[in-house]
Image 1 (spheres, rainbow, N blue to C red):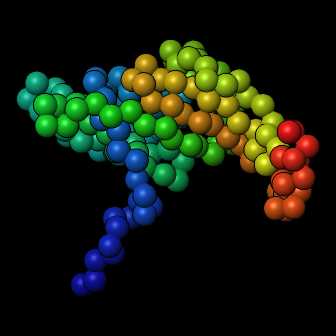
Image 2: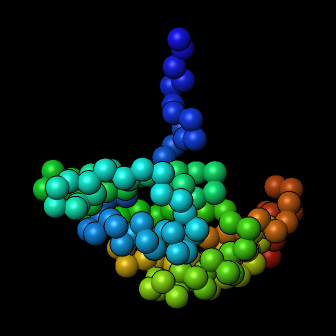
Length: 143
């Protein structure tokens, strides 16, 4: 039997977040991104050794920090159907704004938030298909 080099449901690159109190990050991801918890493995003390969350068609792995694996923050970019709604849900869930939603020269509407764990979440909805020439023209016009 042939085994695929990556498990079903995963892409080639999968972010992995190391945070203090990973269960709170799981709750944040569920509330803000409507994430689904795929798996969770915990120590006897309740700390999370490994968890997997599904957001749209992508997965994010996470765990609690430990002496062997100290905290690491990340910057993640998500394409979502409605950046404005998710941005406001993130703020309601305790995130702080990095940038309010705005239309970008490259055809996305985007925003940024910082969660309570130090991770940056850059949110976008693709609203316009543009040629490379048109993007360059728009970028040059901003200078």
